[in-house]
Length: 153
Image (cartoon, rainbow, N blue to C red; front, top):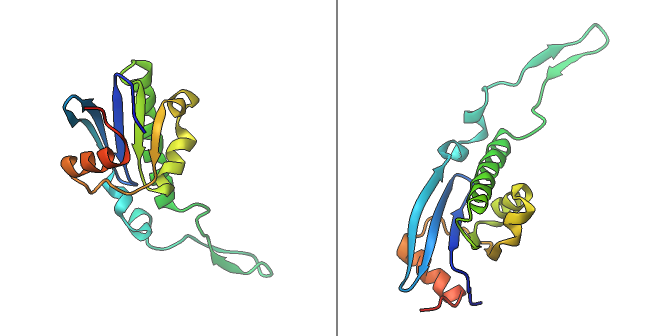
């Protein structure tokens, strides 16, 4: 699908990294202007929390056991990172830095981004690609986008 907007941002994200690009069309190129990173999101749950759950001992009839966490600490970190990306996109929207967005992220992260993004940001998403492409270099990412979307030359 052809994008006929003046200023297009490309957002490539996963659960621990996000790169924001300005898409230039003549000639087609990506210009990285911001990178966000939360390397702790790659840690295992055990590395994010204490090594043992808390313990309790009830009265004579109540028994004993261990406390368990209600939410996964890794999920909380990923949710916080998604919220940070959504704030960055809203800030760019408020300053009229872009007219359209191309959002590329795996389904799990994509859902969280849409959960935290404002309605105004969601309205500017021209393409929502649910793929994990954060590992691609700029040239390969541009080639993927060019094959997926008709970038005018």
